[in-house]
Image (cartoon, rainbow, N blue to C red; front, side, top):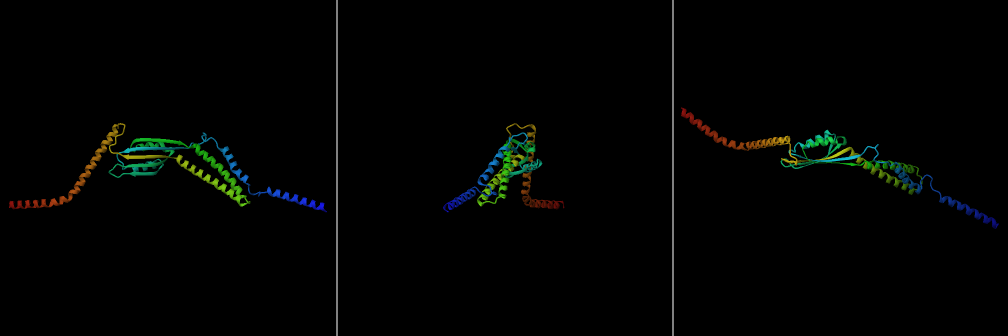
Length: 286
């Protein structure tokens, strides 16, 4: 009897130990363990390394940012703002920023930032130079092809990682901490994707449209470092003559208007004198 009781105790102990071992190694089949969740970014990084190729490949269109600055001098500033606006529209661009300082009668300065398509960059600069005399000009370019295509590749691979996390989240029926861990990882991946996509949009804008800063300063009787040619001197002489004629005409007209009241006052005595003279002449004739 004692032996039979001992055998039963041993059997129960063995069964209990087996159940505890199975529970210790058990987890929800529908929810990834922490090790599986950690493997998702690692797999995506492996895909990323495999997908990243040479950014400067000849098969890829180069992404280059073109900028230019143009400093001009004019003797007459009045028509310049309209000329700049018409020039930007003519070359399929637009004025991103403008600033005009000064007032009529005093030297004025204007500054415009103009965005022009890359294909029309050179022709726009040639036309802009004709608005005045060039005092300085500077052009620059920055090749951002490597950064651009690197970002595109990273976005693609982050999107693959996002898809895997969404699949895990859709099948999740496990514990709440595991679900929250997947959601945190998904939010981090989406944030990186949105940040990189924003940078790609900025690079697209900077490489599709060039940026030209045009500064125009009004300087009367401007003398450039290089001696002016015959046509330039002839144009300047004609311009000075027309300006002098305008100023003289303005002074004469202003003087005439100012003299009108005095003419009325002086006209009365003149009329009196003329009337007396005519009266005496009639009497003398009779």
